Image 1 (tube, protein in one colour):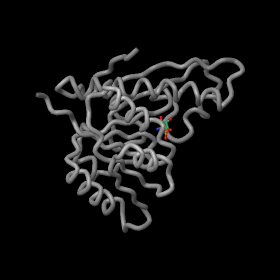
Image 2: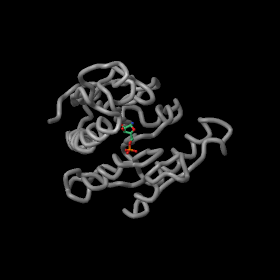
Image 3: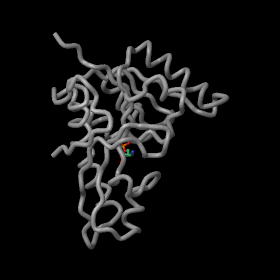
Length: 203
Ligand code: GRF
């Protein structure tokens, strides 16, 4: 029997995408094992979600370490002891450093709330509203050393209506993210080979 891949999800806040992944594993939509939550904010709601789902977690504070290299080395120890194959960033608010990238090259993905390369970085939803564009969306991409710059795996559009508010647009984007991320992960993890850099659309 084929062995399911083991995932670590990295989150810094609410963790609604983490929850969508947990739910997809439980419903059988996503053939994977959730082996670890990594969180850099001790008060984050994502931690409670991990506790509720019985998922082990590694919670840390960057300021307790001398450098990014130092906390990424400790992360790697936790990832290895949990036998993690694949890292899923879901609202993790830090750039991944070379220590972790070298160890998990081509096996780290991120979700971003815009149609990259448009609106990278923080507050991508607010950036799109301020720019006055008529559509934005969601991107799942492989992670490299840049800020939201790695090869794109999948994208989905979201219309911006005339009377759109930040709250209404956030709600629409999150709803799309919660469907798209588990679906893309299922494809990536069950295709045997990772389709590094190959763009596909998931409807
Ligand atoms: C999402 O919009 C994701 O695209 C971005 O951060 C947000 C995280 O939300 N990277 P949540 O913590 O999953 O609710």
